[in-house]
Image 1 (tube, one colour):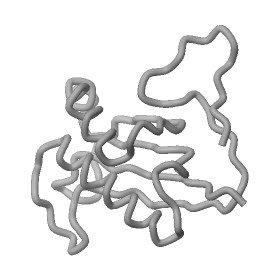
Image 2: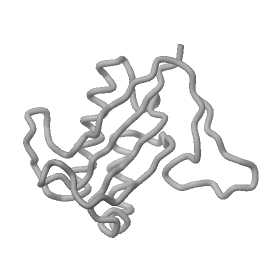
Image 3: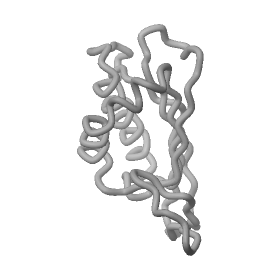
Length: 130
């Protein structure tokens, strides 16, 4: 996996501008902050983000992949301000689950998610090297 950083660009914090990878591709659908039985244990934004990331890793493990294979994430959040204000706490939760691996990422504020209690939905794409 190669991180793509154009010369002279400011280095992004918490994500990469681009990633090039070759291998078996794994696509994880949008994961939300409920457990394996579909139950929410918190309405806290960071708590739901942590659970969504753990859920994504559980799916990746089914393909023999781990966080180091993630090349892209898309975060759908209900409240842009809530996401931005979570800063340090969200970063700590991310590093606890994913580590210091920062794939290409996008974050988008949406009007609603399909599950009423969901505060975030995270899609993941991974590539397991050949």
